[in-house]
Length: 393
Ligand code: NI
Image 1 (cartoon, rainbow, N blue to C red):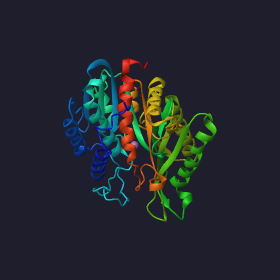
Image 2 (spheres, rainbow, N blue to C red):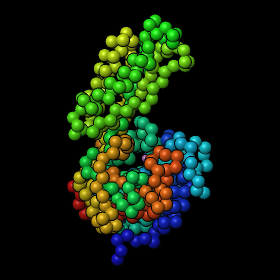
Image 3 (cartoon, rainbow, N blue to C red):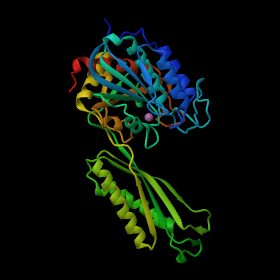
Image 4 (cartoon, rainbow, N blue to C red):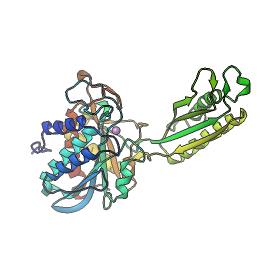
């Protein structure tokens, strides 16, 4: 007997769902059509209890024949505000909105797993709960909203995956421990005294002060942080001025802090404020510093990660499973991991020969659609393996 019965869901079916979603992308917190499509598709499968935990999310519960533990599997469904530059026939039909992160593929993959598992209900020991989540891309994120709506009640394990362009199609990427960073945001306003560009001595130049802040922020990673501890402080926006001959009153500087440890987030925010305070005071300006703490870091549980790794090796071969370094990207999957042990892993989606090489969030991003069947098979087999005899501790 083969490990996975391939008859239930075909590659063509997965591709059809993915392309429909790709052509009809919706931004975070606006997934009305997407969630309705998912809801109706799930309704057409047998044995599922389908519900809407929040306005734009969908949950389906599949209770197996034998009692046991509960495994939740999550897919995110939202797109990005990017104008697609691909030229294939199923490009986005919505100007300025694009599935440029692969969430269309996540949704199709999990629909496939739900369909296949619903047809193999009698083999399931326990419950599989399918979570179709809205708004992963924008803080505060749909995951926390779904957790607050109770989707994790009674859940023993949670898994999720990202189709991943840095990894070649056919491979599965596994990370033990901390897999993804906490993405925090800072906004600094430097308030000086505007005036004539030709008479700088009568002004307090917010631009000159702001640039010193930008260069001093580089000290935090290079000189204040243990080199063995990952941290990023990136200035990504600097807004000031309206004319070539006017020194502006204010400069607004913002960016992102990425870290893997909760205490370091606070510490870094503290250092930023110290630097801003010192520099503005030295030059007679005033300031404000605002911090928005984003998603928690994604920390995988060893036991569940090991089970996913073993299942992937069994399905695809040892050489197809790679250990990955953590990434400084953020993911609100961490909200589920506050409630149950679990694992977030990566499904290779890159194919150099087919020209599928663009990074996530790029206007020419796409995935090798072969990854859809691979992801579907892994979710299905992982559901059996994780729930079997309640054996993951
Ligand atoms: Ni994504």
